[in-house]
Image 1 (cartoon, helix red, strand yellow):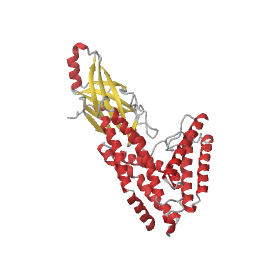
Image 2 (cartoon, one colour):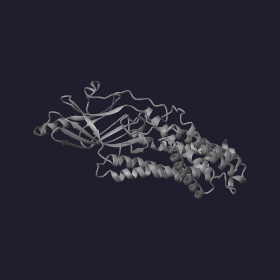
Image 3 (cartoon, helix red, strand yellow):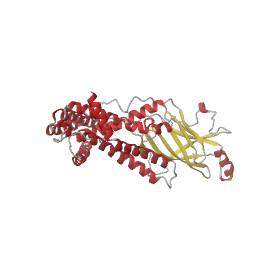
Image 4 (cartoon, one colour):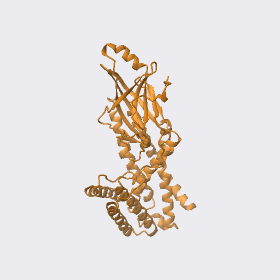
Length: 410
């Protein structure tokens, strides 16, 4: 076992530059997402696209490349591999590679931890974020593992990734044509039942292929095992789609006590509230006479506690519906908002980065009794009001009495 750890340390040392690049990409995606959430509708879009490119292209591609780098450093299918001339058994080498891959699976969570703490995550949320993020990296690792084990060069690995992606697209289209409405995803927890069967079969056959390749170094037979595993998985996904899978999230998640106050801030432009991991920022606030007030807000919230009213990933546990109130600090009067989207570009749930879901909303508060002639008192009333966000499991027509009196932020 000491030799396995020695090989693992050697691999980690050789990856030190790539790990720095990986940390920079993870930090960059979070930074760009935070910047765009602080900008108005005229300036946020370039940063939004930058965050999306980092999250959906650069980071996953680097994740695939790291798996390739770890396995190609001592290739299991290269007849000229250096380790073959040393007293290193295939099983020992496999253990060392698995040690490195498990350590690397935890690397994104380690880099993102300061961002989660700064975002107000509590202890339970931190634990769930670590599980969620580590599983995402493990899913990428499991997808790339057999492809890297059966390729001796970078060019061959890239070709095999491309072929595997095409096969998955074609199988998903065939799956839809057979009556399913869902396509496959990287995670067996995020697809339909049939999709879970298919992707789980890929992961299982992939692990089998890697173990077989390292122990026997029979590349052709390993390749046939991979093809057979994918074929059996597809057949199983068609005929076993009625199998019930009870797991629909990335770990044991407790629904917060509701109704729950998750944000409260003065209605001034630029003010920000941070509570329970939910961030709410006022971008615009203006009257729309004769009887309404409009506020544009940017938000971010943990994806694993996304309310029912939000288009959230299937890993999210429904925590309730969202409601927004303007509550006057003097007379206690509360007005509930109608919620809309102020941007067609950034739909709710469109930007999911580092377990945070970013959205942009327009809140319209109807003020019966206010008229154009009362514009000064109208503005004064809003100026002395707090914007409050509540999560509840039922429709809230009135502001919950248990949250009176409010203590506004200074």
